[in-house]
Image (cartoon, rainbow, N blue to C red):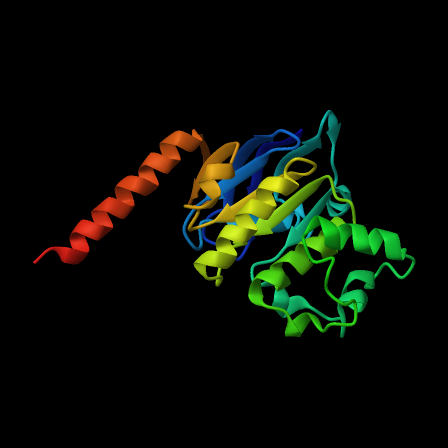
Length: 231
């Protein structure tokens, strides 16, 4: 289980903390969902968990072991929002082997099979893939590393409804073997596969029941629909 205790991030140039005393318990082989608007601190939290930024204060634990900043880089794998913008390899094979030249063909095929891309040629350019396939490739890049926790920043952003549904089904399958923590501002589809949910606002995190959050989304959608037809 991943534990965060009183985790704060307060850069000196900011008038107030970006993250304020965050507490979170994330069980293994579940999908946790953090929902919040842009600027609420959710992407910053993932960057800290991935070891890309160092918290100002607080503690992080995996099971009973307290983790350092460098430990987080080994523990977690981060899939960025619009990960296709970060592709560097000229082919799928090159992308998967970046930083891991020793990877066997079997391990590469295993990762691609896990995300449903095993029928593609390894010589295909990542930029020639559809949006949904690119998200799957970004997942495979992280799965190759065998992280304990897979972090996803706005995984359905920019995808059409069909690709969004396919990605949600894939995440539901992945959580059978991996621990996933997802952040999103639009989590309507993701709610149906979430085991635990939190809301974040102005750097403050609170846990909410998935059913309660689903009800909030339903009420908001209904209110939006009514307001759009109001005279």
